[in-house]
Amino acid sequence: MSRESTPVLANGVHPVGEWHLSCNTCQAVFNWTITQSSCPECRAAGRIGLLECHFSPERKPSKDLIRQPSVIESYHSLLPPTKNSRTAWDLTGNTPLKRSKHIASNHGLENLFFKIEAANPTGSFKDRYAAVTVSLAKGAGYRCIAVSSTGNLGISVAYYASLSKMPCVVIVPSGTPTPFIDQLEHYGAYVAETTPEGRHLFLEYLGSLPFWFAAGLFLKRKVQNPYGIEGYKTFAYEVLSQLKTSPDFMMFPCARGNNLYGSWKGFQEARAWGWSDSLPKMIACQPDGADSLRVSLHRGASQAIELPAVSSVAFSTSETVAGDESLSAIRESKGSAYGASDTQILEAVNELKAEGINVEPSSALPIACLPTFLEEFHPSPAAIIVCVLTAGERNPTAHKHNHLPNRHEKLSPSIQSLKDYLVRQCLDIESDLSNPSD
Image 1: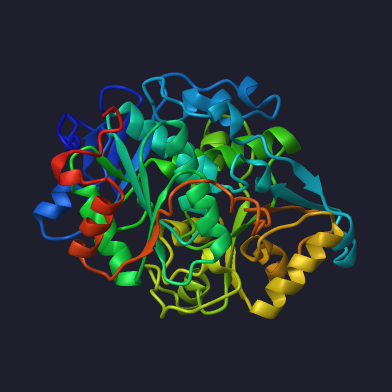
Image 2 (image 1 turned 90 degrees about the horizontal axis):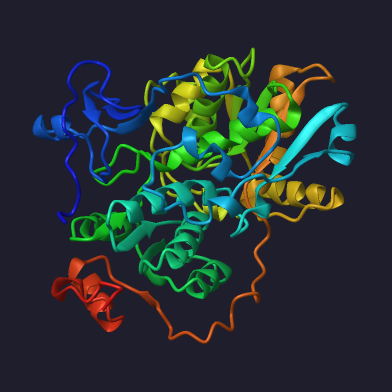
């Protein structure tokens, strides 16, 4: 098998089959394939183009699919084809939607809801993204997975890779909290801690190797992932099935904003298929200083603005830049974006505890941003507002006794450093010892 299939330009506007890829930069349309590289047409022109999945069903999907809330397996006909390698899709999604009591009452709201993603297998919304990504990579014949993550994405990919019997290297930034490292090792991941420059370098290198799939983000980078956000469409399907109507607002904690954009795609599909009559306004919530979406909206930028790196108690959402598509979704939906201070975030964590919900700080961002949101939009008391609580509180001792050799090392940002680490971990890819069947 070759490392990956290069997208081939499709004949005409509508390719054969229900799925195709297109470039958001040059608008080229490609036949369906599994790739981790940017648009080949743009590469030939010396630029980076972002590929995106497009679903054109031959028949309008039945509304019966959302009669009752269900796991993402129930929506497999609406998600990218995986060659029957849908790992743990029957365990992923169908998370609770809980009506707020105390916080809603404090703000005079009647229909404030929490979408509690801690009910997913690894306790995070990233399970939706990882379930789709890993299953497609497995079905396409890849043997190993690599991912760069500030926390939850790495844990999710490690979990699904473990179930798929695919060795997984997770590249994390310096200073990653110990509970994240422990859980990564619990799922059998090889953890390479390095600088921001090293994260990009390592992921691109591993994605260039035979049989390795780099589970990147839906972001304009050399290594990218157009597939994972399709899993986030299930947010929309589930919320519609739980509420029996479309919400007025969806509030998301955001780093890159992939979750917000994927959900927006799902709501758009649902309206096009006659499942709903309206679309929610999409609201992005980010830590102060890592609020690329808020800054970009405020400045009227056409593309997401990259900010200097900062530290925040909301560690897993502290990225320097968001996605352009997320910015466009906010504008198209007539939504907005906000930032919150560490103090506001920690106060929001405590507010949620009064609701009986324990979350990591990043997940509390919608509650931290709620007062600013209410000041801008002045929604009616009856407005339906859904706050997505993306991950539960991590237990620092839950995964410390895993009886595995230490797979976590701090590496300098060089390819040789990474190669040496892979050899020490018996993942000497150049002599193809990475084949898990050996």
